Length: 340
Image (tube, rainbow, N blue to C red; front, side, top):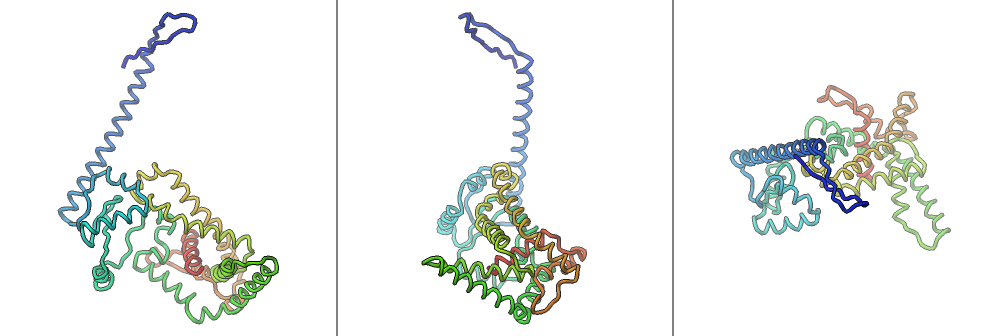
């Protein structure tokens, strides 16, 4: 491409003419390459989506739903909030019936709004629909690729994790072993309440109960009494994680695109996970060192903690391997959230 640039000299009204063929020939080349690559990428995505949608219609017919336009429809859904999607779903159920198919992300989602149909699916045909779906991108990070009880696919790993929790922590004999711990936590609660009564006219009781329950479950999980600084750090980290889950939902729609469109939110997700590991990994390592040195005796004064059971656990369907630190962080976080 040949281009002329007209430059006006401030010392003269005469128009000066300069010619830069070399620079603009290179600019033209890079522009052509960039546009061509973008067009190739868009055409490839469009063709693959059209091929998938046509194959799906022939082999696996879905319930009715709104028209799906590749690329355009997912982008429209990305602009909607969770509350807006819920309102749209109500209108779609009115139009299409109790079962509606939406293609919000890369995979179709079926929404059911009928009690009898839900009973048929979950109860009468539970063996067909009982398994968990493949983990979504944001959940994959937060659940260590589905290595916790709440999200793990039904199978050997799920049964082992669930059996371990029930037998080692929820069994009545195990609950009784923490009687001394509960007495200690109750004493701490009463002391904090009495101190607050003397220092202020009103008391926010829920904060004191929250603190007491956090002390109890942190001890049950890691087998040690922690100071208020460590406890507050764990509480803040877990609360931040719980409150941020809705913000990360959008990252599951077309992850290849949302990683670029919502790059800061992906970084926020990784930061939340990193903060969780920074809060819990030191406690896991400290308990591991105590076990290796023989300081962990299973008695009323030092009952077996949840992390002790995780350190001894092996996954037979994954080569009899032990859980890694990330997976133990996920399971401990699940334990703390469920209890507190």
